[in-house]
Image (tube, rainbow, N blue to C red; front, side, top):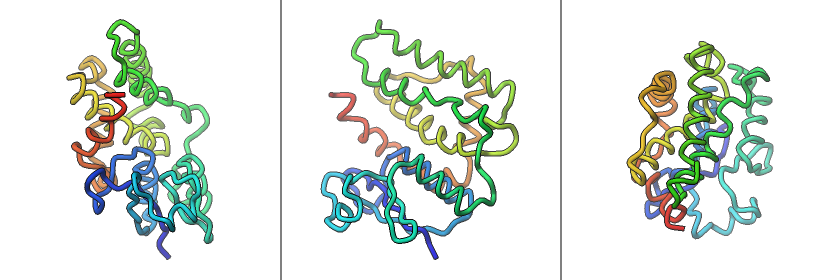
Length: 212
């Protein structure tokens, strides 16, 4: 039986998968584990009544397990790992937090109006730490085998690339060659190609935050 997942629909394109990196993380997990699923695309600005009834918080992603809808991508990915243990995507403890500060650092830099507030340096420092880790352990965060940390980072690095490129004309420094190779590796995965949002939806998805 297919797993049911509620995902964000693209702004202005209700039949197209939207730009939520947390939803893509869950879709990547389902794809990598070869779990069949069906997707309900949710218009975030006009949520359907049935969705609000089964998921009062109204957040995506939401996945149905045993007739109960569950939100929060961390919780969802944990349940998927428990219910479908093969192939294992569970990361060993020492790599579970690798890159975990990249996304908040990216958001801070993207929305910053002050070029001297240190937000760019903070992001570069986080990317440098990831580069060092990959240099020692790569090509994936846990070596040769993909794990849940990679599937969490892939959508976030994609958003970072697209949004910072568009709004700030910024790119990951060339010197961080391991991060560049890592992004190429992640973005070329069949599961990523299948679940990634179009670049224009990523750009429009960040518009209100950038102008905020």
